Length: 228
Image (tube, rainbow, N blue to C red; front, side, top):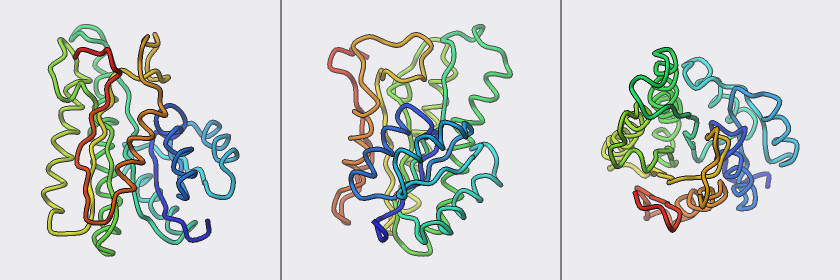
C-alpha cells in the first residue's frame, strides 16, 4: 500500500487504538501508532508490517504532538486522518482519586485531545482535506455521580462540535466516537456483557470510509443491554 491513506492513532498500544490500527490496515491505511508504551507499540507495528510505524508520544506534550505529525509526513509523505484516542478514567467519587490523578487525567483526556487537533489541523487546512476523530464516551452524554472522568468526556464532546463548526466551510471532517461499556485494559475490573475493542474500531472505519460529501459527526455505540 505505498500510496494508501495515512492515519495517526494516539493511545495505540492497546484496546481501541490497537484494534483500530489493525482494522485500518485491512482497509488499506498506513498507520502511525502513538503512545508512551514503546515496547507494546513496537510489537504491534511489527505485527502490522511495513504499513505501520511506532512513535513514542506523550499527548500532553506539545513538542511530542508536533513531532508525531512530522514523523507521519516524513515516513509516509501524507496525512489523511488523526484519531485522538488517548485517555484514561478514574473513580466515581470526588474523594476517590488523588488530585494528582485528576490533573493527569484532565491533561490527557482534554488538553491532549486539543493538542492533537492543533498539531494536525495546519496540515488538514493547507490541503483542505482530512479527518479528525476523537474518542468521547457515553459518560460524556449523561451525568455520572462523582465522576471527573465524565466531565472530561463532556469537554471532548464540546470540543468536537466546536471544531466541526470551525471547519464547516472546509472539506475537513470531524467525528466524535462515543463508546459504551467496552472490554479493554482501560478497566481494572473488566465489565461483563460489554463491547469489544474491535466493535469500536469498526465504527471508526465506518466514519472514515464514507463518501467525500458525508461527514459522520457522532457515533454512540453501546452494548445491547446497557441501559444508560
